[in-house]
Image (cartoon, rainbow, N blue to C red; front, side, top):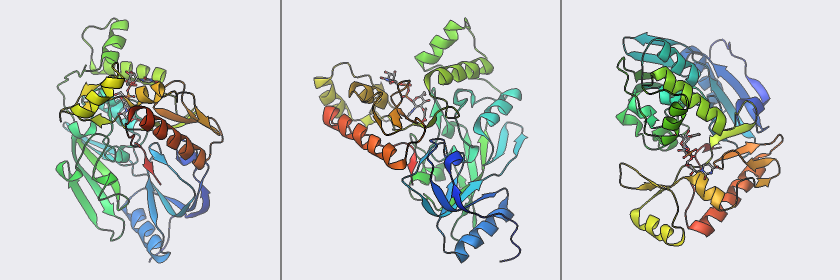
Amino acid sequence: MGIINLLFHENFSLATHNTLGLDIRARYFCSAENLQDLSEVLAFARDGKLEILVLGGGSNVVFSGDFDGLVLRIDFQGMEFDDQKVVVGAGVNWHRLVQHSLERELFGLENLSLIPGLAGAAPIQNIGAYGQELDGVFVALAATDLSTGEELVLTRSDCHFGYRNSIFKGELKDRVAITQITLQLSSDFLPILEYQELVNELERRKIDLPTALDISDAVVAIRKHKLPDPSVVGNAGSFYKNPELSSQTLANLRHSCPNVPSHKTEQGLHKVPAAWLIEQAGMKGESVGDALVSTQHALVIVNKGNARCHDVLALAAKIEQQVQSQFGVLLEMEPVLY
Ligand code: EPU
């Protein structure tokens, strides 16, 4: 290995690097701003036989305890617009990208306004909100293989996107660091107004023909009103995916529970709001230690201050058991658990 430029912090607190605010420690922590940094990091990890955990904004991770390896924060910056395409460094704040695109009158991200986290993390869970998903604008990404250092390019089809899912939660989990994403935006604006809540908000604002900026502003207002702000109270957004049930399972559920809301997916399954199941199971406001099922939105677990990993996991186990025994539905965690 050549000269080491990077700072490798030892026994480093990750409290400000995960939005749930869990005060856990990494054996080593460092940030990489470019490929040169990244190759130093890989060499350091190889020499020390350290496992690497790649972290973006830490807004979609839950830790089960301290991490006895190297936590790597990806801090690649830069947004290069070329006609209707944009190439974005993985460390760029997601909402900043949305705002920049809107300023340039490039559309396709407006419904994804105010999602916490960094651009490079967006493909991992195929972020989605208010009828828009990342894969609708996604072209390709650049990544580095953590064990070989090889630089890879993955196209949209390589990423196996699904509902809050991708190859990075499966086959490639913990095997690559995403360094850059490329999106295809559009200068033609096609409003996506599938969500009644969004339509209602625009009506409330007396907007008949919304611009992309109007949609973005409305989404920001809804999110601020509905979801606890991670910079005020620790949380990792939706803690569970909305379960997708077969027609038969939904029919069985409707038998005992006729008013369960559902929404048909393109695959012919029925998405049922996990928040509704959790609330009906009486878990809204339930807590273990300082981990609490948000009284604002039942799908969010918040940290009242000093929640420990096992509080969060014990609360999650309680929710899952209660929903399973009352409705026979298995909830699947949405953030990545380490
Ligand atoms: N509901 C309750 N109790 C609550 C909150 C909601 O019963 O405390 C019920 C209501 O019936 C409501 C339904 O749940 O109509 C759905 O709630 P909401 O519209 O808030 O959406 P969600 O399904 O809970 C999903 C995404 C969010 C995204 C919104 C808007 C998932 C796992 N979550 O939430 O994404 O912002 O739709 O598109 O798909 C995230 O992934 O972190 C996230 C916040």
